[in-house]
Length: 329
Image (cartoon, rainbow, N blue to C red; front, side):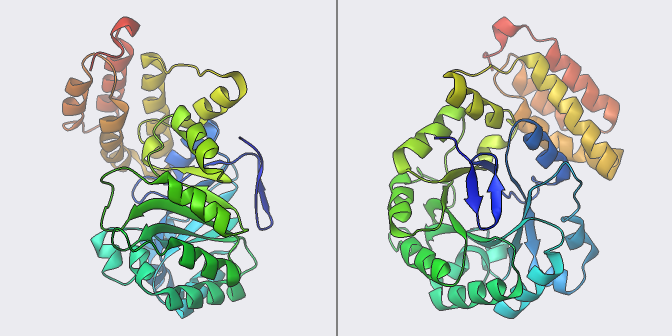
């Protein structure tokens, strides 16, 4: 089930990739996931309006390094002209361009972008056509099943995108109105795979290695895109590969969990300085601190962390937990 994945001119070593996550998939986190085996990583959503207006903070989302390749850049906006201009501006920064047509967050859909586009297939056609004409990079879209539950426009949207030159499509099989509630309907991924000839990637409810391989088996999709399942769990990529190759995976020890927090902190300090690193790691410790005795206490203590030393102390506290208690909290 794991195999090389070809998207346009880009060939990936295998078909397990890291999704774009706003506020999460910055350079430090991408590097962590790559070191655990992700074959491709996406930037956070990059605002087209921010790029066109030469926003410094927006351009900072594109910061990368040689280890961070191949890199996919995800753009969001609702104007075909602006998206095409943005594509030209960023094509030297990455190896693939993706247009977000699935984000359900109000501040994104309120601008007409993200999953709001699912209400306007003609605009989707114009967007893909304009961006395809603007760049030779592999071009993909990420969509949801529809705006409201039951309106399922994903097949129509994917066919339109394919006809306009899109190289692959990723489906999170929930509607915008569902947000992240309920269960993702993986049968929609299977239906999409049967409806188009371009590669189809599946996303939604991938929280461990077994979930990932089950999606590949049940849907026949060409690849999987891990999103929330990577939060506090960058090892998920390694574990998918281990299960596929050996039928089993290496459990994550509390010591490895603590070491990863320190590596994540170090990467963040090198990228953004101590103050930003500590602020961001507090959020991530909320996800790292799971599945061991005293985890809830560590999560509470993280709220008051102010310095690198505070984060290191929390990591040391985690590493001191007995492995026999590693599933107690």
